[in-house]
Length: 502
Image (cartoon, rainbow, N blue to C red; front, side, top):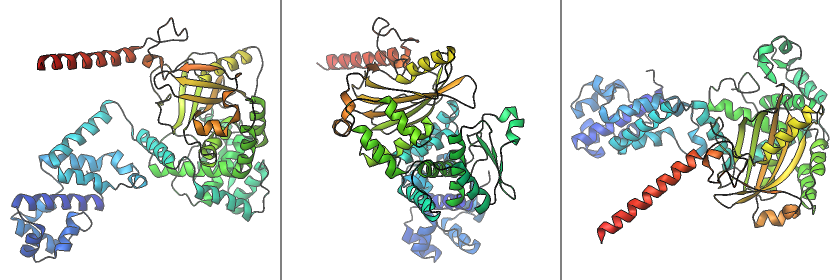
């Protein structure tokens, strides 16, 4: 196992502290025996300094061990999990700093309670291996947590986009033309924009763009992109350059995740593009007017989206950035599902849940999402229209969804549309707002009687409704039954214990 300098300092510090304590020496006593300062030894134990060979010899002599034994990266049974922890891809890539944690603090757990920590770390690594939890899943989860901490709103990125427009004296009124963005990439950043090469590679048609790190840099654009998608990709590419983001992926969608910095930089560049494309002040004005309508008006909602020449995904995701902060409605979730037109299989491909409630979650979850969800019914409506030869750009609807288990109710807005780069596939994007006092005060149409209501759950497997009460069920409630059996066992056990104590 190859180790970084940081890892070597950490291991030496932990070994030194362990050996010193085994000898019964205080830090002050070891300082006297080695003729080294107490503060210097403390820095070594904290993993902040790695001493020169002559000082290691002094320490080893004072501890009664050899030089090689002290500097060896081999550790005893109690600390064995440490080397596995330091070498684990998760620890190497996980962005601890964004959560106010350092890897050193994780390792300190091993120092203070090596036996207990060893068992914990072994369990942690084994669970990850047993359930095939990939590093990228942790990294995307970390990004979602980072977004939630900031209510998915980042002022510095908003200001960067505003500054970019001001510097070029562009008007704020939408839309921004792709020609302007192309000129920036070509004239300011020396790009070559290629809209023909990708068409020759059918295996790569699912990518919206591919970036080639060459001189000059090249951006391969999928010729089948919608104008709004192309403009967003160009804006994101400018974001990488304007924000000075170096580490990045080659493809527009993830083929391989190599580091959290890639994930974070992609998020920042995409956020910048959205802020460039849809001005926050203008959108806030538009949505303030929309929220004051006495009745839900789907056509007006689509009209606002069309004003910005945005795709449903771009528009609703932009709302997920602005509404929680600008309208003080943080209890919100964003969901994106994909579906092959006419099929009964639905895939959750993106989610951001900023509520305290459990909503459909688990990308790649091998369960059946509740068929009462608005996304599912809109998929069916869209597929029916497509079967009849109609090809709407998007359809929109609203629903009041009450979770059966928690009794929390959400006002859900969903837009469904065909996927341009995947033939025969559709996508739906949903925003759900918790119906609380703040929402009722902000959104006048929250109790519009024309908006249908539905009792929903996460998945069929987790839902306790019988088939008689839910004709939409497509799978038996196996997880729900297991949970109920466990609750019953706990209750009966407690009754037995209480009875025997009498």
